[in-house]
Length: 112
Length: 118
Image (cartoon, rainbow over all chains, first blue to last red; front, side, top):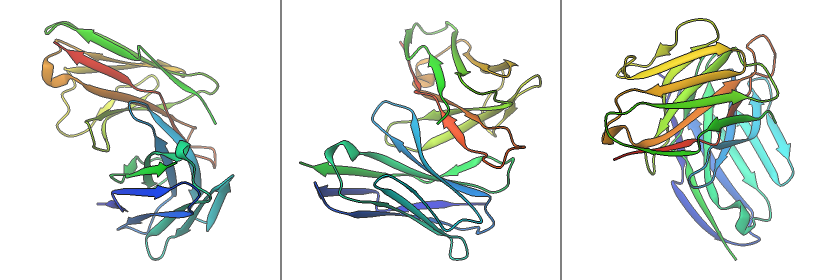
């Protein structure tokens, strides 16, 4: 059974810092991995999708990497802003038709 | 990215009544939709997978007679919480996936519905 772990559970940083959020998964046979953002009381916003054959994806100040063999992914946020404050969720899909398995999330606070 | 809408965004109802939540994929056709439940400070819990034109597949421990799911078209799935009780109060989120045949296979989420049962 796939298990997804996110470390740290919470992170507080001053504005402008570069930061890394970590995601690990127990079964390396994944189809793809998605990073999401969730604001309080809201749904999930898809940030980046990495296919199993890819090593990284970038969107603006966000960069996600994938090391499938070691069961790890990182989300790098450059020059953090208070508007980046949210919970970040990592989720993996085992096969093309299977469900997403979510981590517990990292609650990020960027202080002005 | 693709847009998924949910309606209503919040609902308050009396115990014993039924509540219907709609989930729509606005700019793509979703053969598969998912319904999740989220408790405060916790991650999402998958309740059921809904395939257009067929019966939903429920996760273990989720009562199918309690949570009725209908996926009548490629852009609409509904979740009806029947005879709601206070313990059903939660945040319900739907999701739609780009069809499996595409290489993208990305999943998009609705904004969620906050259900409060008095």
